[in-house]
Amino acid sequence: MTISLYQSHVAKWRDCTACDLHRTRGRVVLAKGKIPCDVLFVAEAPGHSEDTIGLPMVGPAGRLLDEIIALSGIGQFRIAHTNMIACIPKGEDGDKVAEPPDESIEACSARLVEFITIARPRLIVQVGKVAQDWLTPGYKHSIKLHDTIPMVFISHPAAILRAREDQKGYQKQRVVIALRDAVDLL
Image 1: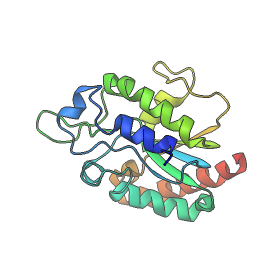
Image 2: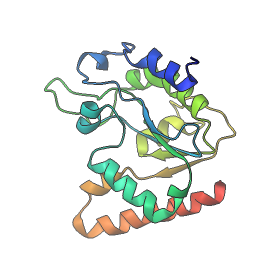
Image 3: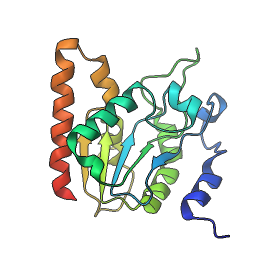
């Protein structure tokens, strides 16, 4: 039996100890979706739901992203999801911190680059500011990716969920429009 590249990737990273986040995680959260994919959503980090289940974007923000994907029409393409880091970034008190530490993103960058190579996306969607900061060429901390993959930035669905009630619909519609425009890149 031949092991697929993705199965090899999972076997290689499922017990990762490359940074301190492995000490407090429940599960390593690698990816979900169709591989290879047309569109790869790269978000920041697993949250509590993802840490429990072991899959990215399955909590409230993930459900909102699924709704946005359906409204945008991009769902007609093969989609996959991953994060900048594979372990939940918890603080000393056990709560999730606002952003993953730079050291953890750097430690997890080899995993991310390997997954992107396996997934072969035609478009990368940077979900949130952390993904934008690290995946955009020329940024201070950018991770070296294939220069030929177009990228588009969207607000993180968690930010939409935290927005004032009178702003949520507007922010959600902005993301839907950004994804509709991104379809032109495919």
